[in-house]
Image (cartoon, rainbow, N blue to C red; front, top):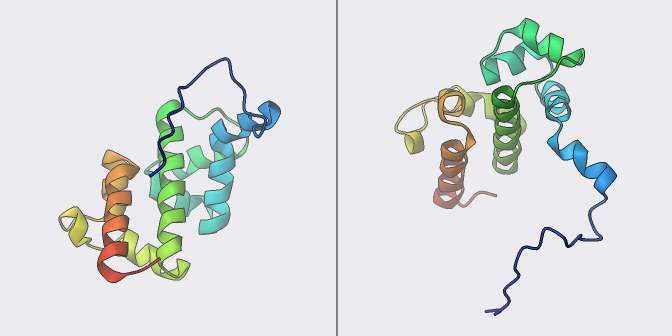
Length: 134
């Protein structure tokens, strides 16, 4: 085991981070575009994050995204990426909309919308462990 302790120093800058590019990490529009590309259409994204399809279209046109909606977009993106590490992407919708024992029988899509990504990601980790996936 390594016995290394690093204290966070807000004044220190890591040369591996390009400040001009790190702003892209916080842009929910980027994650929205990727979700639309992955799912194929704005209507699928609107169902995934539980928002009106017209709102997704407005965001595509550059409207600002609130903090809550940003969280939903990033959470959905994270869950889909994690699920894609376990299954063929074509199987993911069946899992998202099906009953999941690791979520007490709830649908992952509902848990994601109500509680965020944490519980759904925990379920995915449990599935990976249980079935030796990944």
